Length: 165
Picture 1 (cartoon, rainbow, N blue to C red):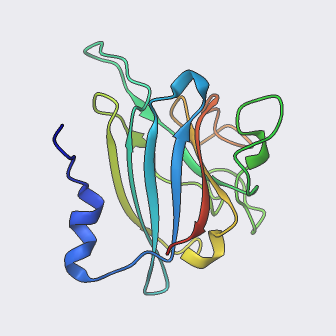
Picture 2: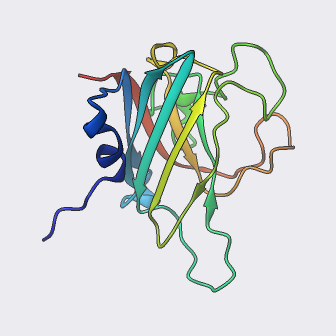
């Protein structure tokens, strides 16, 4: 089997950058093939976020949107009883802002046959600030309107954010 080229690694390794924090994302039992990594790099007054995921929900219909929400959540655990990843709690929102201005609100993932790559810069949080929190991937897109969390559907993937080694 041929090893996949990681676009995120190809982007930053030549620059010599090392992430401050990282989440390794895994899917719930219904999305066991979902996996990936979200890296957080200290950059200027904020954070460069690089996310690369495989096995995302995907509808092969020609006009299907195939968009999944991704957020940083307050809780530090992907465990919890009841609903999948309930230990992640709600959106990371230290400023008490309305959605979509939570610090943990991130741009959506556009699934191409289940694969997505995203890179963006934010000053809503620092890479070290999110250590001990979680990254949650939702089954649908965020509508950027509904309160408190954007009506993005169920949680299909989770990763605990840790200091990068």
